[in-house]
Image (cartoon, rainbow, N blue to C red; front, side, top):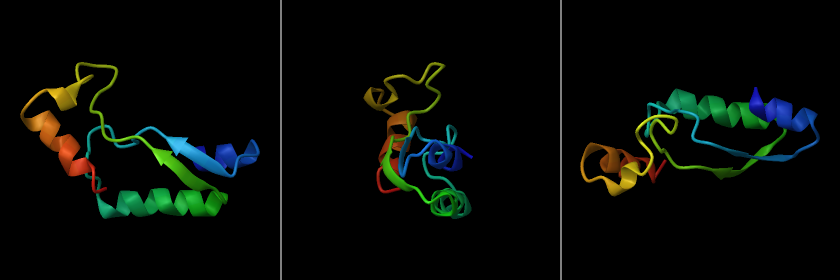
Length: 79
């Protein structure tokens, strides 16, 4: 819905927070759905934040914590 709302407000490009809070590597179908929403709205993606975990919760700075959370970020980079 967000790309369509941006287009309705007159924007042709959007920036997004990482929309899959629990998935540093979302399913291909979810990536395809985002691509299709952008295309259907007539917008292009100008920026997409990296996976950052549960920002309202305990995950701020997760990249600096060795182990599972920093590995999730590393897996997210190619996406």
